[in-house]
Length: 124
Image 1 (tube, rainbow, N blue to C red):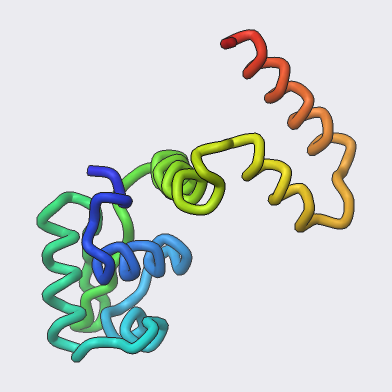
Image 2 (image 1 turned 60 degrees about the horizontal axis):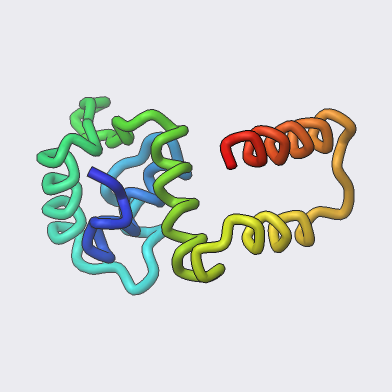
């Protein structure tokens, strides 16, 4: 399941959990905008766990949640959603905007970008 198909609250929780690495329901609730009740957060986490996106472990009688998917898959899904939503589906426009956020690139970063452009051109 891709994260862009999740309902808004579940997606918010999942994104917070990905950013945190791991967290308790109370920590996630505290980080939410206009949070629902604690039991609603636990219900949302249980749904995410049922979908195979989240797992939990128990530490000192407290559930600690973490995301299951590979970080690269989560990044790809989030970026696709961002490009569709804010850049009219144009990866080039999104890349240009992202480059505008940074003051400078290291030589390695610049070379990686050049290589990514070459690879994209070859794929046609």
